[in-house]
Image (cartoon, rainbow, N blue to C red; front, side, top):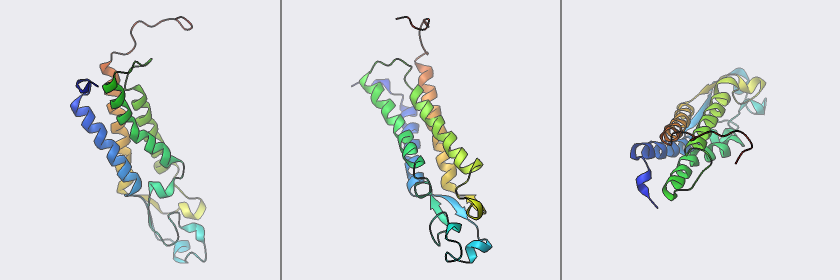
Length: 168
């Protein structure tokens, strides 16, 4: 194990971004619900008016997205996996950091899509759904993970001597 292969600042930024992404996903509110007539009528009138649960006006990313939560946890693990690969000196067929960059950009796109383009809920439930501070923290952390992976892939210099497809 050779820890000298790790860049200190990138390792710290990656670890902090991963930890903040997990904390944001699990504990910080991502969405706020505004009061509208359907919600004020109560859950007996329209139980679907509350996307965060009956009577709840704030919800986390973990509560809101049943599949996305697992993808974001995997993206949060990417910097730790990259550090493990670098410390152990594993040989890869791609520059180290590329998969971390892809995981970070993928998480960024998924978070942005589910908050900006297609907010949770449908019909009445989608009305008055606002973005809370936890959402923006998760978006920034995903971008930071992508940048850490990108900077690490630049250090390796990319592929040396490209070959024609199908050759060994």
